[in-house]
Image (tube, rainbow over all chains, first blue to last red; front, side, top):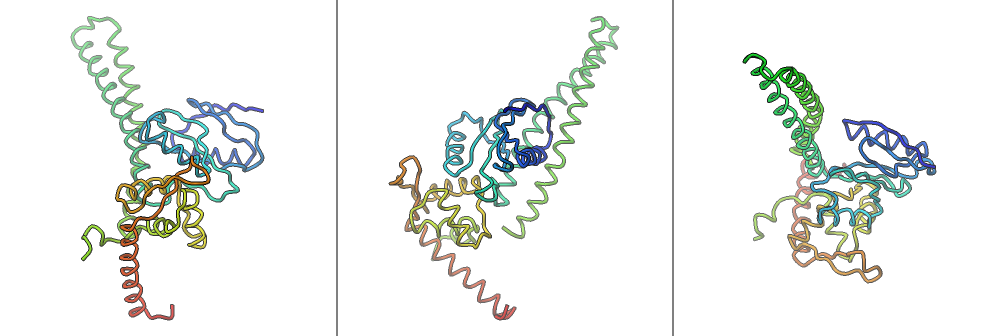
Length: 187
Length: 108
């Protein structure tokens, strides 16, 4: 039996936690596309799930080699979404973490931080451009009709989106900082 | 004297991967072996292992050999250079332990 759950996460670690809670209840993730999780009924806690952001798209040669390596090591890639991959391993084979060293964890967080930051800047730039176009149009006598109000509305919402992505990025930056501190004194 | 780039401490993961590869092993074997060697203390993440293997291959501390039983799985083995590195590391670790015991006391 398949179950579809629609849900959105900003924090991939919360998403991981949720997937593992679902797995504990016998709902094993078998596919994912934008905010759409497909679960298949499985014995309780059969799999442990992890989510990773790759450096390249999953179709890139390096990603293919990496996913192949994971599969040789008992890690199954159940779904990919842009550069994100959803991995699982049989819980009976012991604990499952993708990275066990601090350096790799920092690199992974940095990849995520950069990708959120990129979206943030796109929103900010597009938002502020729209705002300024709207304001300039209003000032020169509203020549383009209601168009300028449209710009202001779009601009405001894009800028707010930018603020949202800025907020998503902050906790990741904190985590990176903490790990870097840890790395300075121990491996 | 060894080159300066080889004087630094090895990471725990690299040290145990190199030790494991005194006999040929594939990735999964390394993970299991390291867990056993360390009494379950060191659990190598698959991503960490993948990164380490690639770096060690590049540095020529290990080499890949085609596995006999299952040709799809790559096996790895330590090189002579890798063995030199491990030997140097053991000397370094011994110095740390000797100094630690001398100052803190042997009866830990």
